[in-house]
Structures are given as C-alpha cells and as structure tokens.
Amino acid sequence: MKRGSLVNVQDYRKAARAVLPRMLFDFVDGSALDGQTASRNCAGFSDWWFRAHSFRSTAEPDISWSAFGQRHAAPVIIAPTGASGLLWPSGEAETAEAAARRGHVMQVSAGSLLSMEEIAAGGKGEGERWLQLFLYRDRGLTREFLHRAKAAGYTAICVTTDAPVHGRRERDMRNGFTIDQRLRLSTLLDAAIHCRWWFRMRGSGRLTLKNFAGRATGNMNDMAAYIASVLDPDVTWDDISWLRSEWEGPLIIKGILHPDDACEAIARGCDGVQISNHGGRQLDGTLSAIDALPAVSDAVEGRVPIFLDGGIERGTDILKAIALGATACVIGRAHLWGLAVAGGKGVEAVCDVLVAELRNAMVIGGWKALSDLDRSAVTRLPQ
Ligand SMILES: Cc1cc2nc3c(=O)[nH]c(=O)nc-3n(C[C@H](O)[C@H](O)[C@H](O)COP(=O)(O)O)c2cc1C
Image (cartoon, rainbow, N blue to C red; front, side, top):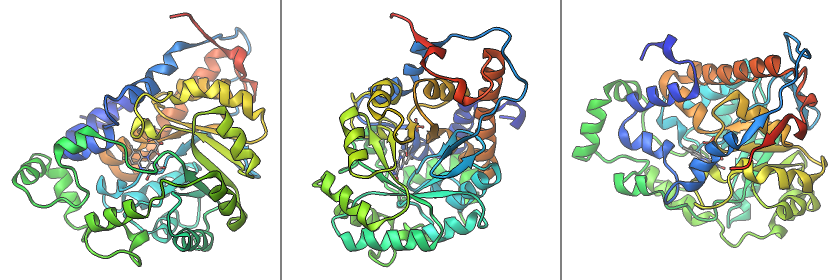
C-alpha cells in the first residue's frame, strides 16, 4: 500500500495487517469472547448525529483543552498499550517521541517492553507522559513504580480498574499467542511471509518487560506470568485511597463505565476519570465507551475531566464524545496501526489524520472552539 493511499485509520489498519505476522495483528485487533463490546465501541458513535450550524464557522477552530494546569494542543491522547514494542523496534520510545513532537499526552503502559525511564528519554524531555499502573498485590512494587515515575518526570498516574485478570481473547488462544515467540514452524512461516517485520525486529535483542526486570527473571513469558501473579483481583476502593495518599500528582481512574464508580473515584480524591472497557478486551457485553459517557458525565457534573477511550477511529468520533461531556479522547489500536506501518512517523500520521478530521468537522459544523460543543451539538436518532 502506497503511503499516499493511507488517508484514514482503517487504511492504517489494513496496511498493518499486511505487514504484521498474523498472531501479532490478532493480538492488537482482537477482543474478548464474541467482540460485542469492541464492535459497539466503534458502532456506538454512529448512533449520534451532529446538529450542524450555518454561518458560524471560523477557519482556525480552537481545539486546545486543558487539565491539571496544563494546556494541550489537541484532544488526542495515546492510550497505554502493553508490549507495543513488538510492533516496531523501540516502539514505545518511538511513540513517545511522536507524541512529544505533536504535543499529545502519552499514557505509558507499565507492561511496556522498554522501561518507563527509557520511554521518558524517548520524548527527549519534551512532551507529557502519564504512567498507567495496575494495583499489584505487593504494595512495595506499586510504591516503587510511583517513585520511579516521579523521578522520570511522569506527571500523572492512571490506574486501570478493569483487568483484575486477563480477558479471554480467543484469537490469541487459537494462535497460541505468547509474547515470547518460540520458534515453532507456524511462527517461522508466519514471520517468513511478513519478512519486513522480521528484518526490522531482528536487531531488537532479547525482548523483555523491562519495568519488572528487577523483580522477575527469565523470558517474556516468565515475566508475563509473574505480572499475572501480582495482579490483585481483590482490590477495593480503599486501595485507591491508599494510592491517593502515596501519589501527590493527578490520579486518574481508567476503566470507569458506571456513574456511581465515577462519583466514588471523585470521593476518593481522584482527579480524573477515564471511561474505558479496555477496547473490549476484558468483559465482553459490557457497555461501550460512548454509550456509557452521558450518564457518567451527568454524575461527574464537571467536577473532574473525563477522558474516553474505545473505538475512536475518526475525528468526528472525538467531536461527538466532547459534545457528550468528554474532555479529550484516548486512542489505542488506532495509534498501534500507525506504529506497525511506519514507527513513530506512523503514530504521528494517525494522530494528524484524526486532528485534520476533527478540524474539518468543526469548520463545516460551525463550532469555533471545543468549548462551544455541548449536548445540543448532537442528537440520537431512534433505531
Ligand atoms: C495491544 C493492546 C494492549 C493494551 N495494553 C493495555 C495495558 O497495558 N494497560 C491498559 O490499561 N490498557 C491496555 N490496553 C487498552 C487500551 O489502553 C485502551 O483502553 C483501548 O485500546 C481503547 O480502545 P481502542 O483500541 O478501540 O482505541 C491495551 C489495548 C491494546 C489494543
């Protein structure tokens, strides 16, 4: 596929499918069980229609937003995606550099191949990064991550609530996907067909989840098993209060779908909520992000910023989410397709596409600034 023919996120997905070994494409694209939530994450946006205005446009709409005392150029945030360094050499650092060049916040997964310090260095000191964490059984490990995050310049912590255990991702199960690929015949054949990926990755050395290097030894499978063993399915809101007492910067809860949970998060001192169902990779059948947004927004009543991830593939999706109460949107698979196709430049290109679509829609629809959008900007038609 020629670079000029990559004009939208779906084009990048198709191009990524062509370059990635099948099991890696499936790892990114896949979802839990029947994928109902993953599909609805995308489809839910098309239930909402703009009420565009006439003669109100400006050629340069203001798409900046602010949270936690910082102003940002555009409402696009990079989602935490574990093991994305499998898609491109030093993938997480490339992503950090791309995000920094474009002024987008990057949420960095604790399950990255590179360490949080290496990823922070990838942004060359520029750019804002938030560290995504799970709550681990070992509070010492969580505390250690908080200290390291602060020292490496991470400005906020995002705690993911929806992965006390891994979801059942059947494409991964069928493919026998393990992060540390043993050289099975099928793996070799797959890699041979996708030789560009193979050549690119061959100099990457031993792949490992470096944030956990001091805690677990062995290959990536041993590490993944270690991480699974320290995830804590017994986490309660009291643990969030504990985390609040340990981290003085902004604290965001990622994985909120229920308005009561959004209120609980605020009551526990959290500074932001992120509506998310992990891209439909955890509990299939749970509400889509855009369907959950109106009720959460009503409950939050503007007390804290609301971030939303799940199914964002168009700048118009972002605009609809902002009209329904989101402050900014977070992109998971979309940026990974760009990364798989062209490394950091691909991440930048995907973000640029979304921003261009967003700006274009604002000019045509007659919204001068993101702050002009409220619920009156969209309507839901009966099915
Ligand atoms: C390959 C992959 C890995 C992910 N790893 C993490 C992770 O380590 N931590 C986390 O909180 N969410 C993780 N997520 C979920 C994303 O942060 C985000 O919630 C989701 O991708 C948003 O949906 P979208 O892909 O439709 O944009 C991952 C998603 C993907 C696709």
